[in-house]
Amino acid sequence: MSGERVVVQAPLPAVSARDGRLILAALAGPLAWLAQLGVGYGLVGPMCVARSRWWLHALTAAALACVGLGARHCWRGRAAPGDGAGDAARRAIAWGGVGLAAFFALLVVGVDVPGWLLDPCE
Image 1: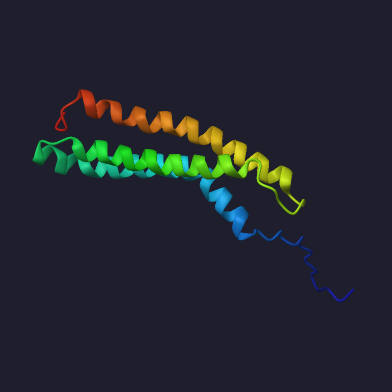
Image 2: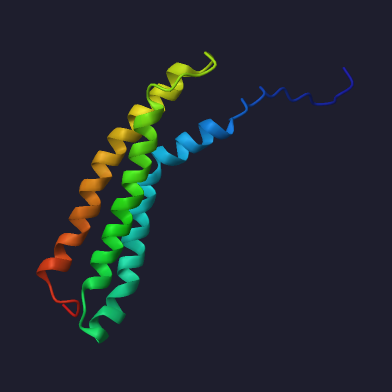
């Protein structure tokens, strides 16, 4: 042997644009919740100064809209005809996205509950 090292790597499967959109739609719920949580913490100071809570509620409505769009795309993708290769994986991602959307919709609403009960300065 010549002492050279040979590295063998399995090729990564290509992800089509359609599959990428489905994955993004499945992750819409967690991403919307994370954005709502982060931006909501950033809005606490301005809401306290303005003595207004509507910013938090508008943020919740926007996050729920994002979750709903992701859920709608996943719901349509669960039974969409494909090329045959990877159809089971697409259906699994779509059903998982629907479940994630339902769970994270509850979390998005749950994050907004203190905004209804507490003053922004508390």
